[in-house]
Image (cartoon, rainbow, N blue to C red; front, top):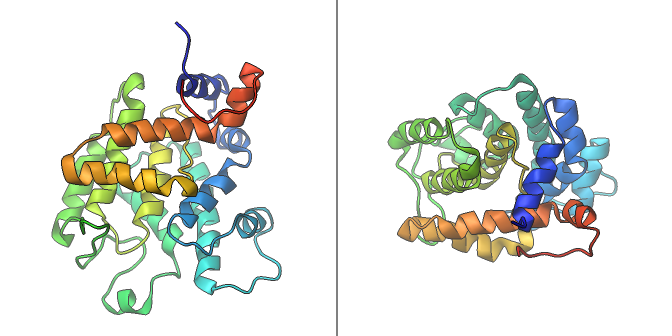
Length: 259
């Protein structure tokens, strides 16, 4: 039976036999910059690929005239990527402590004055009723810790053929819970990828130009608890993320759809 292109992406990743942080960094080889750019751009239109690459490669930018918050967000993405590699090296479980640390690194020095005055802090669950989306979804502050513990407990012992569905479930539930005062999208996408690579599945870049389909898939869960749209979208994004490697393996021109 012929593999579809999503299955090819899985096989190509698993053939790399990534076991160490150095091997993971080599396997990503530029994808970390792309992921950080697209994930940040989904929520901040001022982020550019060139600025992101400069910071990842040189820890600074030249001739920058934009908003300092944008610069902090890109630098934070680099810090979070370093944690990603370190956590993989140490085989840290995806628990509340690690999720909070990812969020802290992604949002340090970017909370606005209002949030700070209300007692919100990077690395802590929200203390006030922050919601998101057209349906204003989000758990009550007092319920966040329990909901996050239950969600993370559900990620254990997932069969290999159910990983992408589990990732979709995790991401949909995470965004629906909206556990932090800020940075929920970036934290949800990064921790979903950590779950995937820890289970020998290639990480996924959710491309900013596909934001409409992305948000629509999340809304399908919020409104109807339908997971299929997000699962399908993540498979498509997996293929798009690893398109060049798939094409090279096939000896064919680039394609952007699942057969």
